[in-house]
Length: 268
Image 1 (cartoon, helix red, strand yellow):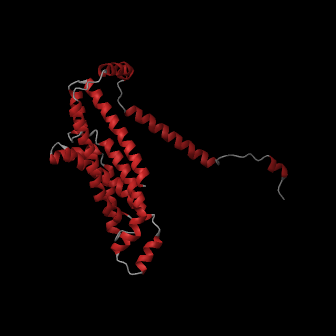
Image 2 (tube, rainbow, N blue to C red):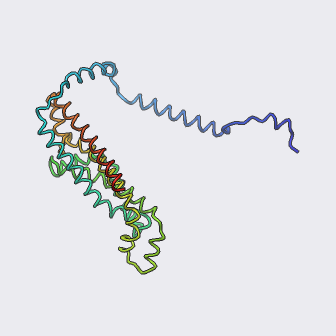
Image 3 (cartoon, rainbow, N blue to C red):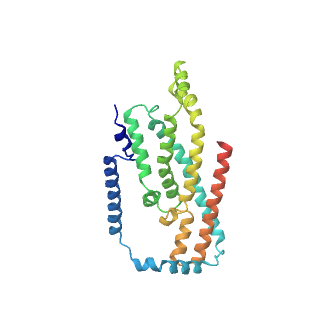
């Protein structure tokens, strides 16, 4: 028989003593990591204090924007747009076979599965600007280096999401085609592709939207596009031209956002 007096004195606790200790240790570890990180960062505090006045002075130098270079800015924006479009198409072509061997239900064997994962991780681990530096060193400065940099960075993104979509397909259509003696190509074409087409378009449009933003800074390392004009204007202290270029980049990104939203509504 349960003692009623002992039951009435029970105190409800959200966590057990062990959970409380683990939570406290975790909080102390995070706090120690933050303190250690701040101590290793070399910050010149007088510049930080002076930053608001420097920002105000910089904006004053940018006003009013100089539109005398509008033609060259528009041409550079078109180069930037072409980089994003061509790189996205190239990345889709290269990512599709990688996605097929990265998915556990379509990969031929464990060796191809790990090969695909190495490709995907390598692509995502290297930043776009680093890819651009490598291709500028190989092919020289220009649009080609920018296209390849964006494309190689996009393979990991597209391949991973498409591979996950392939792994989540309904197996019944695939098994039905296999039961009728369909070849592996027919299984992929009629059993897998129709199920992943909506995801394919969604991921491709999203990646193009991302690539449009990333292509604006490739010129900073010589890989073509509007970033090349921006770097030149900054180097010559032409702040009014810098303001015009920044406004043009913002306008292009906003237009790209509107186009990608329209494509999602029409295609997906």
